[in-house]
Image (cartoon, rainbow, N blue to C red; front, side, top):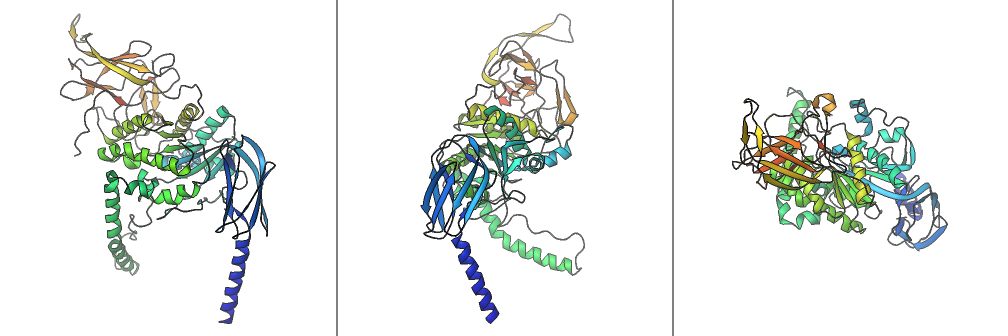
Length: 543
């Protein structure tokens, strides 16, 4: 008992000492990037009442800790550095070296954002040849979080192993960081000429509701089905776990053949559950100012037509809630449209992934300071994680230059402006001098740069090739609403005509409307036209 009492006293003494020492919030550490041009908070922990002195770039602030926490606000700082951040308390002094002031971007979403550069370089060296190579940019700093699920909002950011401090962008750090985030950073930083900090906070296989605050989901009846589904899962979990434990015990005693039983996947700690990742991986950084966020997610909400359509309100609600809680106004939020995936088919398709792409496209008009990177030419038939991360990152950067920095850049491909049905004649290939009158639909585009172009393409790591001598990707329907493959031709700087010899009176056109479309309409900047449709038909009834 005496030994236990002594041990307790020692633990208590160390606890008191620890409380007396001033500490910095974990993101204020060596090599950090802090957000420029906004009031700059610096904060941490200390014993109640302890006087804390904070110095940065020749400026000094003082405060007293309250409730174990302290915070000071420096006035908005311009881009610059490197600086030393110094914090002094009554018992100790803490410093963070090589601090830069610049722009901080979140790299967030699911597995196509989470996937490290190392994995893609190993998987597709022919596509990512030369990356990261010897690339080093000490004006780009990287921070990475580990998957953290929580029932309530957390206060401390969950730093990943190897990222106990911010890391300067150099080969080893880049290989362990998000491939999409890396390419976003190296594409953006030279064009804005300020330091860039990238925070990777993403988890594979997650739907948007996992990143959305609880109050948002519970406050909207539209999302009740999501909450009800998980309530049912949680209610069923104890019995499933009990069954698993009994099966496991029998297996360990040799009473059962086959592989070792697996714990039920869906349970209280599952990273797909509503608001769990918001609580664990977004809430802890709400006091740390950022410039904006880039988001690569959507696959986890694209399994059904209903879910794809629900995303039209779910993601904007998530974005609005983040902005409100950060208190930085409508900071830029830029997302990646879903890449091509699954087998190419000859027959026209109308699948949930096309509806999700349309949802993501339409959100550009609904989300202030929002933008979308289209990668309809960067997919894989057999892998939902295509290796074209340089394409995704660089196109995100183009949108950031436009949305966040007001640069006059062509940031996306041609966008449909209007469609008009017109008469016309086509020559029937099987009869000489024979012509048949069919209707055509004329499409007019904006955002074409110097004009529309049709490109030869090599897709899916060389497995698919599209000729450049014909324009492809269009389907057409008549009043029966049955779509067929259509012919198309660029007829002007910003116009295309579409027709089919099988449809006398066309009603609607769709473009790149398939899980893995073959489509080759571009603008002069080499950016692709994204999927679109001119109809307002409802989605098909799910089988």
